[in-house]
Length: 344
Image (cartoon, rainbow, N blue to C red; front, side, top):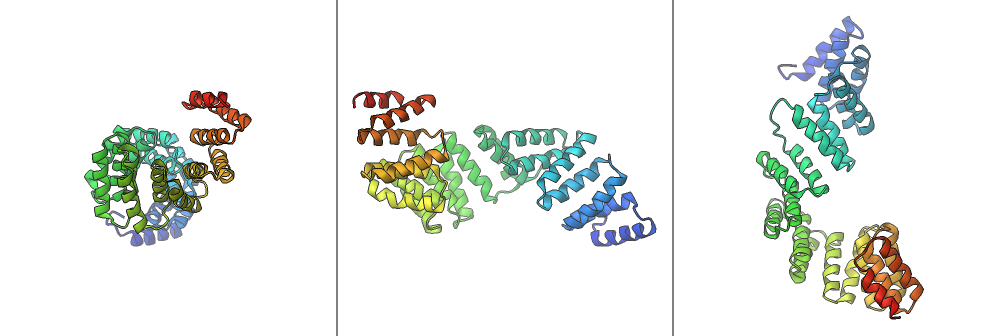
């Protein structure tokens, strides 16, 4: 093992087990070697046997957790890593792996707590770019964008060509209203991978939402569609911009594609409903807006457009219902709409 001759080591451990069946140390070491060779199912068999002889030895539970995780058994892995920490609370690797499982489950707040313990107990300096990327991603997900930028910059120290790090840096800077920095990070991603549609969408979003330059935004969204035709976010982005320019009929085809590509795309249903409403296609507009509300019961824009639609149709009862629901959401639209309803 020390000479990195893992298959040869396994052969010796097997011979040890012939001489002494159930030899716990040999079972554990062979499990470790099998993990190293990515033969995880065999590793699990050996490590389960080792756990019988060493039920309170932390490293047995850690290796078993590793093998479970690699065989897509995250619940069993989670249990094993926690068992490891029960017997050795400062086992840094177990904190890291638990953080990764929580990251995969989109439980970003808890993942960050586990990452904090990993760093607290780590004996050596951490140089894993993927660890810093995942931690930075978590910070973006919980809207701690300054922390995300710092952490993602650490990822870049150890790997400058991992495009996801550049993408997350672009995302974080956009949210920090540092538009030019965001665009530069997205452009760096394009240099690394011109065939990825994601950075084109990112730049489009900066121009759409931050700079309010709809024409420039659509230019970048169309670049995304050159890379990936029918890409849902690019289609939504163009539809949104066309709506903002009051080109409702032109927006409709793009928004229909966005929904065809993702039938749970709430924002696309809202924008399509708005386009249909503005082109007097009231029945379908109502259908799409109600679909948006079924997907997201707290959506305000969908209710706002429905209220306007009902006001146009002189349906005071339904319009008032939308206003009442917006009141419950403490919406900024309430006063405007209530005045319109009173005026009916």
